[in-house]
Amino acid sequence: QVQPVESGGELVQPGGSLRLSCSASGIIFWLYDMGWYRQAPGKQRELVAVITSGGRINYADSVKGRFTISRDNAKKTVYLQMNSLKPEDTAVYYCNAGQPSGDFWGRGTQVTVSS
Image (tube, rainbow, N blue to C red; front, side, top):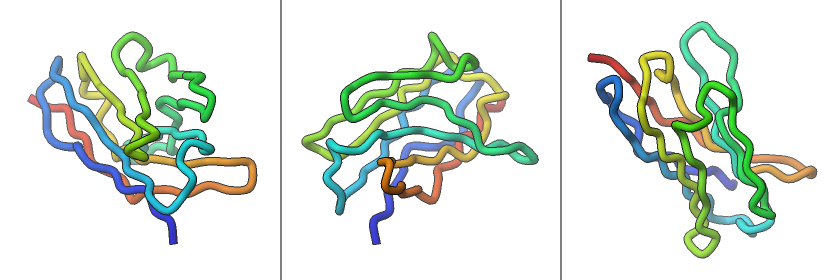
């Protein structure tokens, strides 16, 4: 079974930075749109950023100018660089590998922004 694996989440102070990584072996990685989602306690899961197989990128308004998504097809990895972190960025961050025929979710990595 294909399951993306996220890493890089940790406790960070407001204003700090983190880089999340997601490795997705077992799929033809370059064919998939890769997305980062997050879910805060008591809230629904929301899209943070997506990079398509063709390289198009979209961000949630709440992270524009602070977060950067990128992908390395040779390493089958997608990254999320997060700068100027705020307490409201605290959430479990999930990686998604998607195609019209279906998608795969990782188990998530916890990001906590707190002083």
